[in-house]
Structure formats: structure tokens, C-alpha cells
Length: 263
Image (cartoon, rainbow, N blue to C red):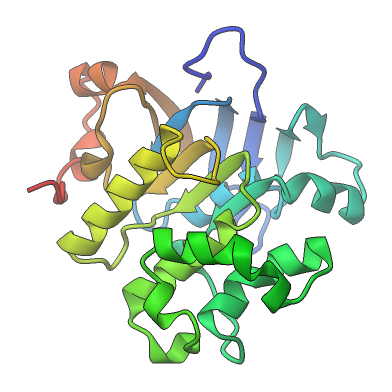
């Protein structure tokens, strides 16, 4: 899947990648991934349960090594890099795992969000507060900022995971099935927030390239996005929304049969 912006240099590129299984073993879960993500892009990849969504996202983030092929971040191949060199690249990328990822239970919501910022800027939570407070407000987490994760609702924990990924204002944001388990109201919050983020309309967060991997393509249908899917362990490009809706691919039916959350 090529960038929607011609002549732009990809921020992320997967070339002939075979995605390894998170469960181990020699058999890839997805073959033939050719995927480029450039500044200003919003890509959506559909894959049903068990088809390797999380493995794909972690491979793109440079966390999971592919069985074959090359992953390039910010024009640098990850092949042969040391862990320190890879970490220096990954700090420019945000990853939101399904459900928001694991928050540290001994820290407050604010402490969890501040952790990566304070680590990379060698500062305390108090010193990071002026940077952190606007993000908490954008995420509607201000009133519960000083509570531990175990005391807040699951949807708020998911948004805290999003905040932790955004605290460094990444140039790329990868999201693993972000609407999973959310009701219609919470799903609409995410759809609206990510649309504004992709348009560069959220103060202090820039305009990162976005890529969502999901088991339901329907709520993500919008102009100016590019689509792909995983079909029987193979990467399949779908193109723009117009190309997606015009395709006769039967495997798309299940990926488009879920709720759209827009009513």
C-alpha cells in the first residue's frame, strides 16, 4: 500500500515482509506485506480475529522481527541495528495496543502518561506537568489524572494508553484495533479524535501519519484514506474508499458487516 501523497518519502516501509506469529513457530501469519506510510497518510488495514493484527502492528513498530523482508523506519532499515539504535528510531513512533496496553498499576494515570516523556527528558512528573496537562484535557482524563488505572473505567484506560503513545508527539501513530470492546459513544469519541489528529487539528500533537489495524472496516470508511486487508494469510491492497467499495472481493463482507458507530 503506497502513500496517498506522491513523491513523499515514506516514514515507514515494509518490503516483502513475512510477519512472524506472536506465538512463535516458523510459519508466518501474514506473507507479502508491501506497505508504505508517509506524512499526512491515514491507512486502515482490516484483519479478522486470529489473522495477525497485533503481530503486524508490532512488526511495523520494529518490536517483532519479521521472518523475511525489510522494515524501514525514517529511511533507516532496522536490519542489523543494535537495540539502542532501534530505540532511537522508535521514540519517534507511537503504538497503541488493543485495549490501550498495560498501564503500570502503581502509577497514577498522569504518571503513566508522563513516564516516557520523563524518561527521555530526564525530568520529574511535576516538571512534566505543563506539557502533560493539555494532553490530559484533550483526552478527557483531567478529572481522573491522579487516580490509579485500577480505579478508572476500561474506556478511560484505553484513552490513557493513547495518551502514553502521544506524549512524545510521534511522527507515526500505529493503533491495534482501538475500538475493540467499546460502546457506540466511546467508539465515536475515538473516531472523532483520530480524524482531528490526522488533520493536524489537535494542539501540541502535530500531524502524525496514522495507521489503524482493525477487525471492522466499516466505521473507518472515509475519504482521503487508504485501505488494505489480510486474506488467508496474504496482504491485499484495496486502495481508496472508492476502490474498496467497488471491489468484488468476497472476503471483505465480514470486515464490513460490523456497526459503523456514526449514528
